[in-house]
Image 1: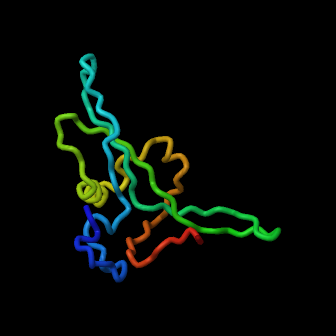
Image 2: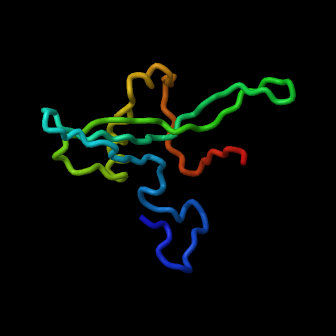
Length: 130
């Protein structure tokens, strides 16, 4: 999908971005398990869900600071091989009803659950400082 459709078109700001491109949640089919000796044929997907906050202690000029940033949330899941391939738009809709879909068990051990989830706010940007 192209963000810019015409050669002389440009984006004035974040509000001009529309559709699935407005969210970071994307999905890709990375492996098809369809060998003849596999009775459970399936497609493996890897995906990104919403951004997670990360807190890191860093040393700056001999002082320790608690910093905050954003990291991608890793997801993986399988679907039946006969099902149509999942699109980014469908993945984003899935996350609205199943926000924990595809979080691997090993990730659940390092994610700190919050009492209340942050509300989506498309006006807040994370900067790497670059």
